[in-house]
Image (cartoon, rainbow over all chains, first blue to last red; front, top):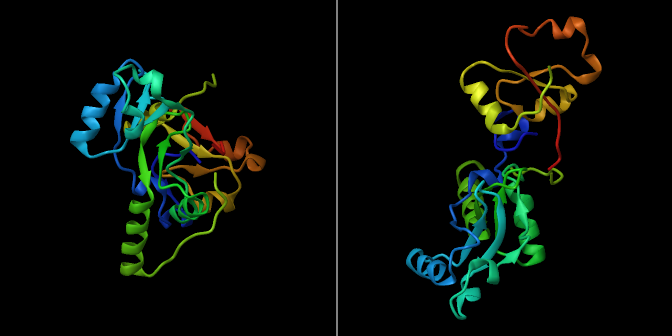
Length: 144
Length: 68
């Protein structure tokens, strides 16, 4: 399916990653670690995304990567972070997060453009809230 | 003349009511999920008669499954 476009159909009522994406700080490879650290301190975030001019995700910088001397983001970034598409069912991603012990991931479209960040905390809150309102429907479907 | 377009162009055409979106996957998959407003003409059923549902004056956007 063409992820990110509005959808209809029986399977589209199950909650997906796209339902709970949060924004994430974005920087370029040329931004300095000092600038990024300052912004993350102000916002309380601990991850930043590095993107190119077209918004394509290039890498990740965590707050702990910024402790050294001031340099460019390119020097400290971790390239090729795992990404997920917005149409992945939340319950599948939550299972994977529990199994692989990670708590957040970037969300991109199939062209690699950054859409935002998804966190385990947000998924659990969303599913809990949803089950409280209408039971826990869930969906079992192969990941894209 | 066929050309490949990206999602932003699909959005633009749909927003203007200019594009006709066609999913060519089997009916069962269309029923599970499809782009809002898309019609279903399964590839195996695509012929002159089924294509007759389409307005020749407007762009036709065809998609299937990219698995990405």
